[in-house]
Length: 281
Ligand code: ACO
Image (cartoon, rainbow, N blue to C red; front, side):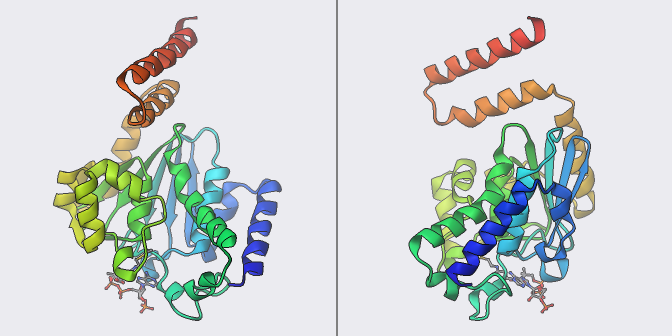
């Protein structure tokens, strides 16, 4: 895609957002390959190109970003799942061809962009993944079958991963000459440690369910047929907790690694003071 095309597309998307497009608008567009259902406090995002193993394009990431921007305020839990046999086979391989993905360009066209345009495009793509960490929600990836490259990174963007016993995670980017750039490197290191993350990424090997559970990539492994129920059970547990306390606690937990013990104690005190005032003041 030419730089001009990228800019026009970004402007059109920004204008659509200003018009106040709601999440349902993006949920039904086949082009995006993404479906959104909101049921009270629960939003379910489904990657919906099973015939292509839920391969992701820039349109997928724009759709995810727009869902994040327009998520109804009452939503407390976001479930991210994939239709069909695979959670997601990663980036659409047409990006590696000279023709690329119709209307979205290719890596060959991206290589000709200036640095600013390129950076802008990458941060637009990352926006589709970043919002899943917001303290106001808990995000759960329900992962079956393949979670490759961008698919693995989407699962890593979620707070929790409940997986089927046929899951196979693979960070394939280095094997294709790329780096994982869809926000997945930080959570991977935080979950499994630097050495294991280097091993997983730099060999592009497959991590199956038993290892995923052992190294902390997955919270729970269930039989494939039990995945939906396992997610429903987790959602029910999460919704049973006081909402404001959950938000404040997630904020504390997310900040813990970047703070000293003393700073974390102070942060706990501040959050607790706010809770006690809200509950008993
Ligand atoms: N992009 C575009 N199309 C894809 C992708 C993809 N990433 N993955 C699968 N498909 C398509 C196949 O071309 C095939 O289409 P067709 O029916 O029109 O021929 C269809 O999905 C089914 O794929 P199969 O390979 O037949 O399915 P199978 O279940 O045997 O294998 C698997 C699934 C292992 C995921 C395999 O398709 C595969 O290796 N895909 C490529 C994975 C990949 O390298 N992704 C890029 C990672 S890097 C990144 O994400 C940045």
